[in-house]
Length: 331
Ligand code: PBG
Image 1: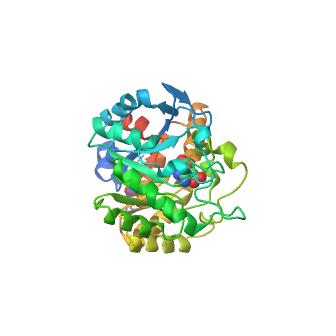
Image 2: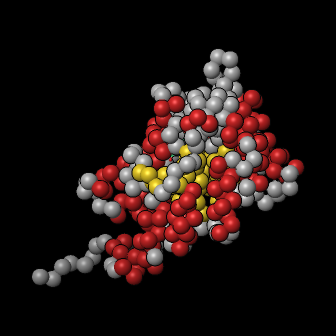
Image 3: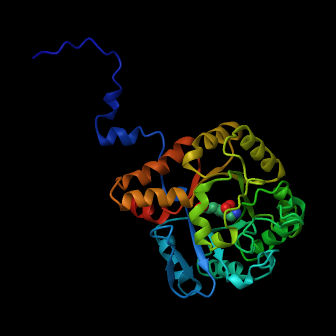
C-alpha cells in the first residue's frame, strides 16, 4: 500500500535511526573522568567488611587499602573521596581526632598518595565521623551546633588534611564562613594549590541514612536532625545564595547534594555561576538503585541513565558509589 508522504515536515526520528547517528548527536556524554569513587576506610580493620545498608560497598582496612585503590586507578578513575571510620572509643564531644596531625585518615591519605601520586584525593572537612554526638560541629551549652565555636576546628582539620597530601578539601559541614576561614588558613600555610571543593548546597536529607551506618555514626546520632545547619529541602534560591557566598569566600568547585532529587538545583547553579559544579549521588540513592537492580525490579542500565542525568543537568563530575562499577562498563 502506498502511504501518502505529505506529513510531517520535520521528522525527529530521522536522527534516531541507528546507533551511529544517536551517538554522533548525543548532547551529553559520560566518561571515566566524570566519576569520583567515595571509599570508607576503617581503623583497626584488616581486610574488608560489608556495609549492610549499602549492598556491594565495603569498609576497607588499611592493609588492603592500596590494593583496592589500585583497582580503582587501573579502571581509569581519576579521583576518590575518602571517609574515615574511627574507633568508637576515640570519639568525643569535641571530635578531637579530626584535628590531630597524622590522624588515622591523614595516614591513610599519605599511604595512598605515596603509591598513587597522580590520583586526586578528596577529603571531607566536618566533624561527624569524630564526634560522639554525630554532629558535624561543636555543641554549645544547650546542645545546639555552635557555628563560631566550630570554625577553628574545621580550620585545623583542613590544615592537617592538606599537610597529609589531600588534593581537595571538601567542607561538608555547612557552617557559615567556613570557606573563608579555610582558604585563609591554606594560603597562610603555603597550601596555595589545595583545592576547596565546597559542599555548598547541602540539603538536610534523609537520603544520607546509609552513610551514617557506613561511618558508624548512626547509633551516636540517633533520630536527631541537622536541620539547623543543612539546607531546607524546599529551597532553591537559598542554594544560589550559599553558592554565591562560597565562591566569594574562595571555593574553587561547588557541589550540590543529594543528587538525583536535586537536579533542578544543579542546573540552576551551573546556569547562574558557570563554575565547576559537582554532584553527589549519595548513599541512599545508591542503595535504592542497587537494591532495585539486585531484586530484578529494574535493569542495571538505570545506573548509567541516572549518571547521565547529572551531566545533562550541568554537573562536571559526580561522586557516586557506582563509579568503579560503571567505569568497567565504560572500558
Ligand atoms: C558528613 C557527610 C555526610 C555525607 C557526606 N559527608 C552525611 C551527613 O551530612 O549527614 C553523606 C554522603 C552520603 O550519604 O553518601 N558531613
